[in-house]
Length: 183
Image 1 (cartoon, rainbow, N blue to C red):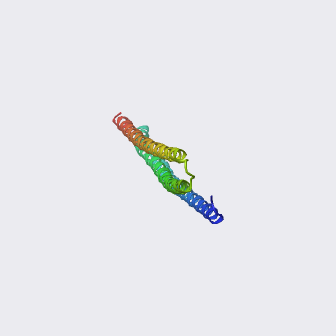
Image 2: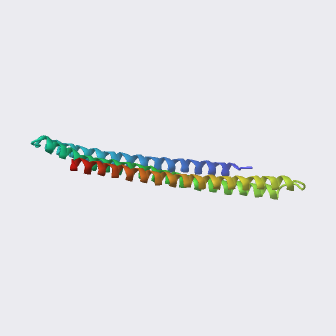
Protein backbone atom coordinates (compact mmCIF):
# COMPACT_ATOMS: atom_id res chain seq x y z
CA UNK A 1 0.00 0.00 0.00
CA UNK A 2 1.28 3.48 -0.87
CA UNK A 3 1.97 5.92 1.92
CA UNK A 4 1.11 9.59 1.56
CA UNK A 5 4.81 10.40 1.09
CA UNK A 6 5.20 7.77 -1.64
CA UNK A 7 2.09 9.03 -3.40
CA UNK A 8 3.32 12.64 -3.23
CA UNK A 9 6.75 11.62 -4.53
CA UNK A 10 5.15 9.71 -7.41
CA UNK A 11 2.97 12.70 -8.31
CA UNK A 12 5.97 15.04 -8.16
CA UNK A 13 7.92 12.70 -10.45
CA UNK A 14 4.99 12.60 -12.89
CA UNK A 15 4.76 16.41 -12.96
CA UNK A 16 8.52 16.68 -13.55
CA UNK A 17 8.25 14.17 -16.41
CA UNK A 18 5.36 16.13 -17.93
CA UNK A 19 7.32 19.40 -17.76
CA UNK A 20 10.35 17.69 -19.28
CA UNK A 21 8.29 16.36 -22.18
CA UNK A 22 6.64 19.75 -22.68
CA UNK A 23 10.06 21.41 -22.85
CA UNK A 24 11.26 18.85 -25.42
CA UNK A 25 8.15 19.49 -27.53
CA UNK A 26 8.72 23.26 -27.38
CA UNK A 27 12.37 22.79 -28.37
CA UNK A 28 11.19 20.88 -31.44
CA UNK A 29 8.71 23.65 -32.31
CA UNK A 30 11.42 26.30 -31.85
CA UNK A 31 13.71 24.43 -34.24
CA UNK A 32 10.88 24.13 -36.75
CA UNK A 33 10.11 27.87 -36.54
CA UNK A 34 13.81 28.70 -36.92
CA UNK A 35 14.08 26.44 -39.98
CA UNK A 36 10.99 28.00 -41.57
CA UNK A 37 12.29 31.52 -40.94
CA UNK A 38 15.61 30.62 -42.57
CA UNK A 39 13.81 29.12 -45.56
CA UNK A 40 11.51 32.14 -45.91
CA UNK A 41 14.42 34.57 -45.71
CA UNK A 42 16.40 32.60 -48.29
CA UNK A 43 13.36 32.32 -50.54
CA UNK A 44 12.81 36.09 -50.52
CA UNK A 45 16.42 36.67 -51.55
CA UNK A 46 16.19 34.03 -54.28
CA UNK A 47 12.94 35.47 -55.65
CA UNK A 48 14.55 38.90 -55.89
CA UNK A 49 17.60 37.44 -57.64
CA UNK A 50 15.48 35.36 -60.04
CA UNK A 51 13.28 38.36 -60.83
CA UNK A 52 16.33 40.45 -61.68
CA UNK A 53 17.68 37.64 -63.88
CA UNK A 54 14.32 37.21 -65.64
CA UNK A 55 14.07 40.94 -66.31
CA UNK A 56 17.50 40.96 -67.91
CA UNK A 57 16.69 38.10 -70.33
CA UNK A 58 17.03 39.13 -73.96
CA UNK A 59 15.32 36.25 -75.78
CA UNK A 60 13.22 33.09 -75.30
CA UNK A 61 16.25 30.77 -75.39
CA UNK A 62 17.85 32.64 -72.48
CA UNK A 63 14.55 32.41 -70.58
CA UNK A 64 14.40 28.61 -71.11
CA UNK A 65 17.99 28.27 -69.94
CA UNK A 66 17.18 30.33 -66.85
CA UNK A 67 14.15 28.13 -66.08
CA UNK A 68 16.17 24.95 -66.53
CA UNK A 69 18.86 26.29 -64.24
CA UNK A 70 16.31 26.95 -61.50
CA UNK A 71 14.72 23.48 -61.47
CA UNK A 72 17.59 21.45 -60.00
CA UNK A 73 18.41 23.79 -57.09
CA UNK A 74 14.71 23.97 -56.22
CA UNK A 75 14.43 20.18 -56.02
CA UNK A 76 17.61 19.97 -53.97
CA UNK A 77 16.39 22.68 -51.60
CA UNK A 78 13.04 20.93 -51.20
CA UNK A 79 14.85 17.69 -50.41
CA UNK A 80 17.12 19.45 -47.91
CA UNK A 81 14.12 21.13 -46.26
CA UNK A 82 12.35 17.77 -45.98
CA UNK A 83 15.47 16.27 -44.48
CA UNK A 84 15.70 19.05 -41.89
CA UNK A 85 12.03 18.57 -41.01
CA UNK A 86 12.59 14.85 -40.64
CA UNK A 87 15.69 15.39 -38.48
CA UNK A 88 13.81 17.74 -36.15
CA UNK A 89 10.90 15.31 -35.82
CA UNK A 90 13.22 12.34 -35.31
CA UNK A 91 15.30 14.15 -32.66
CA UNK A 92 12.20 15.28 -30.78
CA UNK A 93 10.72 11.78 -31.01
CA UNK A 94 13.98 10.27 -29.75
CA UNK A 95 13.96 12.57 -26.71
CA UNK A 96 10.32 11.75 -25.93
CA UNK A 97 10.98 8.04 -26.41
CA UNK A 98 13.98 8.20 -24.09
CA UNK A 99 11.88 9.81 -21.36
CA UNK A 100 9.07 7.31 -21.93
CA UNK A 101 11.50 4.39 -21.73
CA UNK A 102 13.06 5.73 -18.56
CA UNK A 103 9.63 6.28 -17.00
CA UNK A 104 8.49 2.80 -18.02
CA UNK A 105 11.66 1.25 -16.61
CA UNK A 106 11.22 3.09 -13.32
CA UNK A 107 7.53 2.13 -13.13
CA UNK A 108 8.43 -1.48 -13.89
CA UNK A 109 11.07 -1.51 -11.13
CA UNK A 110 8.60 -0.01 -8.64
CA UNK A 111 5.97 -2.55 -9.62
CA UNK A 112 8.44 -5.42 -9.24
CA UNK A 113 9.41 -4.08 -5.80
CA UNK A 114 5.74 -4.00 -4.83
CA UNK A 115 5.27 -7.58 -6.12
CA UNK A 116 8.36 -8.75 -4.22
CA UNK A 117 7.10 -7.02 -1.08
CA UNK A 118 3.69 -8.65 -1.50
CA UNK A 119 5.35 -12.04 -2.04
CA UNK A 120 7.32 -11.71 1.19
CA UNK A 121 4.13 -10.92 3.10
CA UNK A 122 1.94 -13.45 1.28
CA UNK A 123 0.25 -16.01 3.45
CA UNK A 124 1.24 -19.65 3.21
CA UNK A 125 -0.46 -21.56 0.39
CA UNK A 126 -0.46 -18.68 -2.11
CA UNK A 127 2.72 -19.77 -3.88
CA UNK A 128 0.79 -20.63 -7.07
CA UNK A 129 -0.84 -17.19 -7.22
CA UNK A 130 2.54 -15.53 -6.62
CA UNK A 131 4.12 -17.60 -9.40
CA UNK A 132 1.23 -16.65 -11.71
CA UNK A 133 1.72 -12.92 -10.99
CA UNK A 134 5.49 -13.17 -11.60
CA UNK A 135 4.87 -15.07 -14.83
CA UNK A 136 2.39 -12.45 -16.02
CA UNK A 137 4.86 -9.66 -15.23
CA UNK A 138 7.63 -11.47 -17.12
CA UNK A 139 5.31 -11.99 -20.11
CA UNK A 140 4.34 -8.30 -20.09
CA UNK A 141 8.01 -7.30 -19.99
CA UNK A 142 8.80 -9.59 -22.93
CA UNK A 143 5.86 -8.19 -24.91
CA UNK A 144 7.03 -4.63 -24.22
CA UNK A 145 10.55 -5.45 -25.38
CA UNK A 146 9.21 -7.05 -28.58
CA UNK A 147 7.00 -4.05 -29.37
CA UNK A 148 9.88 -1.66 -28.66
CA UNK A 149 12.23 -3.57 -30.99
CA UNK A 150 9.57 -3.69 -33.72
CA UNK A 151 8.95 0.06 -33.41
CA UNK A 152 12.69 0.74 -33.67
CA UNK A 153 12.95 -1.44 -36.77
CA UNK A 154 9.94 0.31 -38.34
CA UNK A 155 11.53 3.71 -37.67
CA UNK A 156 14.78 2.54 -39.27
CA UNK A 157 12.92 1.29 -42.35
CA UNK A 158 10.98 4.55 -42.60
CA UNK A 159 14.20 6.56 -42.45
CA UNK A 160 15.82 4.40 -45.14
CA UNK A 161 12.75 4.83 -47.36
CA UNK A 162 12.80 8.59 -46.79
CA UNK A 163 16.46 8.72 -47.81
CA UNK A 164 15.77 6.67 -50.94
CA UNK A 165 12.81 8.83 -52.02
CA UNK A 166 14.76 12.04 -51.43
CA UNK A 167 17.74 10.76 -53.39
CA UNK A 168 15.51 9.61 -56.26
CA UNK A 169 13.71 12.98 -56.41
CA UNK A 170 16.97 14.92 -56.55
CA UNK A 171 18.38 12.62 -59.24
CA UNK A 172 15.17 12.95 -61.27
CA UNK A 173 15.39 16.74 -61.06
CA UNK A 174 19.03 16.62 -62.12
CA UNK A 175 18.13 14.41 -65.10
CA UNK A 176 15.29 16.76 -66.11
CA UNK A 177 17.61 19.75 -65.89
CA UNK A 178 20.27 18.07 -68.02
CA UNK A 179 17.76 17.03 -70.70
CA UNK A 180 16.31 20.58 -70.86
CA UNK A 181 19.79 22.05 -71.24
CA UNK A 182 20.61 19.63 -74.04
CA UNK A 183 17.43 20.58 -75.91
